Length: 164
Image 1 (cartoon, rainbow, N blue to C red):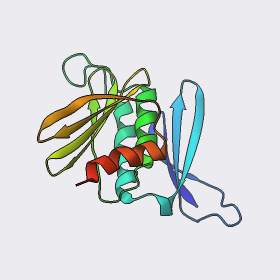
Image 2: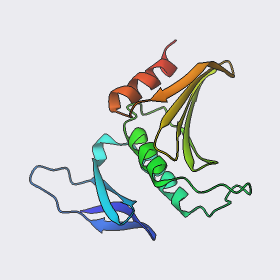
Image 3: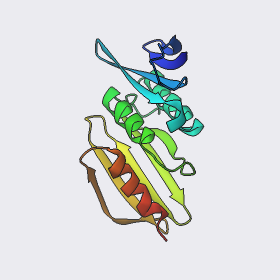
Image 4: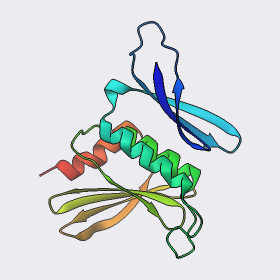
């Protein structure tokens, strides 16, 4: 079976051994952290095409050069990339595709819009995760900090966006 991964040189395709009873399609994402290489495996039937494309886009942020925005910004930090991918892969709603952007200061932003409501989640370079709800084009409340990005936290955040 073939799986997609990334390395220091970019995206690559690597073979993955199929275990007894395992799905034949697996999305394989390598995350480089310093000199230690880790891997996260996702079953292909549990992710959508837009999630795969989103992961590829986020991994591409590693290739941004210093001053990518002409204001001296660093490319997104490895921890911001890792956290953004983990959050994106936990999104349970097929039709809620985020806008994915690099942010000045080494961060990654995921933004969702639905009607006059929105949700912005920023994965900061030191590892924290901040959010802000938007209602009618204006911030709703002060936002906050997420303690972690578990599937339950992701579903709760996006459910608020879907609520009528």
